[in-house]
Amino acid sequence: MIEFSFWDILRNLLLATRWTVVLSLLAFAAGGTLGLGLTLMRVSGVPALAWAARLFIELMQGTPLLMQLFLCFFGIALLGIEVPPLAAAGAALTLFTSAFLADIWRGCVEAIPRGQWEASTAQGLAFLAQMRYVILPQALRIAIPPTVGFSVQVIKGTALASIIGFVELTKAATMITNATFQPFLVYGLVAVIYFGLCYPLSWQASRLERRLAEKG
Amino acid sequence: MGYRLNFGDVIGYSSLLAWGAWYTIQLTALSTVLGLLVGTLGALARNSRHRPLRLFSASYVEFIRNTPFLIQLFFIFFGLPSLGLRLTAGEAALLTMVVNLGAYATEIIRAGIEAIHRGQVEAGLSLGMTRWQVFRHIIFLPALEKIYPALASQLVFSMLGSSIVSQISAEDLTFAANFIQSRNFRSFETYFIITAVYLAMAVGFRNLLDRIGARVFVWRRP
Image 1: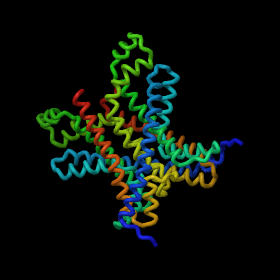
Image 2: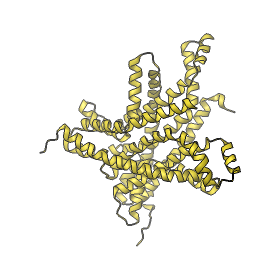
Image 3: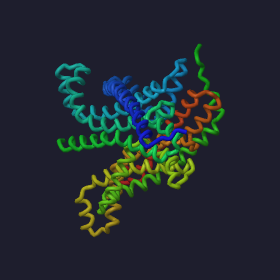
Image 4: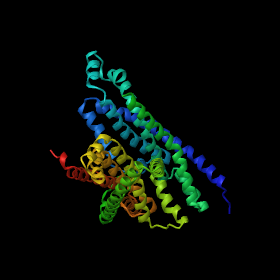
């Protein structure tokens, strides 16, 4: 029987943390891109596009992330493709992230005063140019704090990837627990590691929010 | 060679689904009541005159909000027995839900209480209201009214998040789904139907919360 020292446990957990970080970055980048598309659809003024984006957002916000993960995992497999857990988890987290970010960003875009839209339309800017040069730069300023805040939800969401067998921090913890029979220590350490990843982001988000509120 | 979807193999298990859904509803109802209680106490502690209480409440909120629900669940179910606290899956699921929701509720209710203008409290006291009356009519209810939409969203998210308790084999709706798909090998169809059930439950819960809101905050009624 192999004995695991405290350092063995910690080292293996930290090695697995890399995959939590990779999955989070992947989901955040892809989800952000898709989310931007959804935001544009929602504010496009084209009823069919706005409605489709809204339906998607409502569906994602009204169902558990775990179910979205299972549907991606088993759904892609139906096409006859073997799904690596990273791909299924990445896909589910991307869809989840895009829906929530689109909802946050829509609010930011709508907070831009009506006059800005009218003035830029009067300047003869088409929708995309209007967004690119007038609306989005202003919306970005108010969008940053809640976006940073939401990134914490993405990191926490990656823990669910362990359930479909992707070896990231949570899965590594389960495997180490099964070998060492020290669940209190291992899950405690894992909680501290997640806290270390998430807290700086939460802190930054509330700091940015306060700064924005002061500047008005 | 295409795959034919077959939902019939899931419908046969509808009584099992109903049991699972009922469990999820009970878990949600209990954790909502207890979680709001914890949240109220947490928000009071956060505004307390005693520094240790404030510090405790703030660390509780930050620690829970910055760690995944799944880890909290595993820690409580697998980790706490080594401290001598042995819980059944159902108890651990409820405890985790309450601890988790309590932290979010603390933060939301605190924000509402802090948004109440100091002058309102002074006005109430100078009108001869007791401290309890001031708390109830001037601080708590108006604060609750302000943050009710945010709180309602959080409660719905918490209900959806409860699907994770299936991982310690608490017998909720997702647990029923896991069981069914291990019998009929129709994973996609099973989870598809369960997802629809969750969606319906989320819409229903949201509706119920809106009605409760309209009833509690009577003066808002047009």
